[in-house]
Image (cartoon, rainbow, N blue to C red; front, side, top):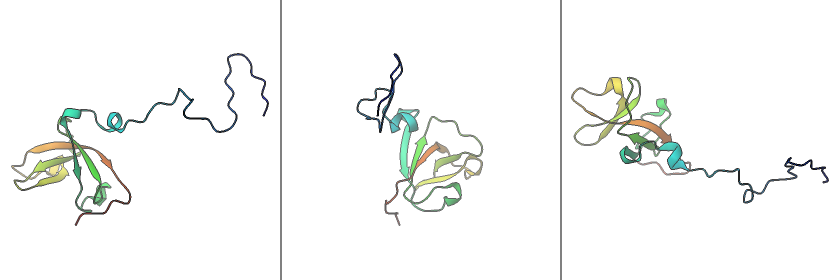
Length: 114
């Protein structure tokens, strides 16, 4: 197609070529999901017990040990045999909060554990 191209105006015709578009920035999941790299850990959810919080078996949980946990935030704690997950207000007595859930990644097509 023909366009009159006034000076200083970019005219695109058709689908843009991503290789030539310098305005496109790369998508870096580390920058998007991890705020404190030295204190961030990944856990795999082993069951659908937290489906009410939209956490399903095999979801990847992003846990930040440096992130402060509010009363109703989900936290991970250690129960002398394995890790547990609950809201901060429902951590069992005598258990220490290990880290705060700051993100969940769902991978479709990943087999569930169990």
